[in-house]
Length: 345
Image (cartoon, rainbow, N blue to C red; front, side, top):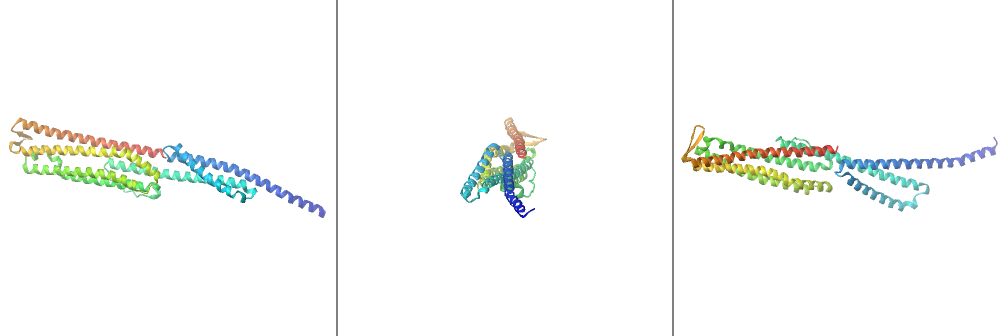
């Protein structure tokens, strides 16, 4: 091959190289478009899936997230417009596609955060269910360490709920302990009702029980109000705080009223016992204990005694029914929380 032919061949190869390079560049950009579109669609689908796990109304949540992505796209577009003249001509399409890819990455990032938050919320509801189960079953709360990696942004709420439940349990245990020390069941012992010293001691115990119930009633109101105050002053995310306060406002009065109803019945029961004891103190000189009965001098006194005792017995039975009803309602709320937790899975 002559020197001229070699030079021509070399020149041809030099001309073909840019052509081949341009062809590869166009193919790369074409593939980049396809991949970017696929990634974008996947990111949007992933975001919608995350919204169904986190939001109670997934469509509205998805619209909100999409609006945020639109805002990201707007500012990226503004930045791209400002840099448009400085970007080489052969890189402009790549710059646009890179912007789309950035938006897709943001969507995936937001989706991952939503799924992580949904997992934290699910763990929190499991914890709340456990707390309610233990409280309604009269069991001591499980000493579970509150792990921030498990509960995420809900950690503070879980801590507040756990502290509140522990306070309520301590109050309840203290109340039952003090009521047990009062030995209120002694009033059904006719021997006590006919012995002045025993009768006087029983009356003092009933008056003490009345004071204990009043103190616990005031304490229960403070516990519920204190929980609301602590939630309002907490560092919880505003959206979470708003949803929580809305939910608590709907159930607080109902739950508190249930607790107070039981206490009021117990107070009425104790009050009925005090009336019976006062009556028996007045009749000590005109009654006596014989066999397993109290003998009164007049039928009128016997009828009054039966009325006081019957009222006390009726209120005691009513108290037992209210306690059972409260436990059933607590179990129902526990199941509702469990269902809500399952719906987040």
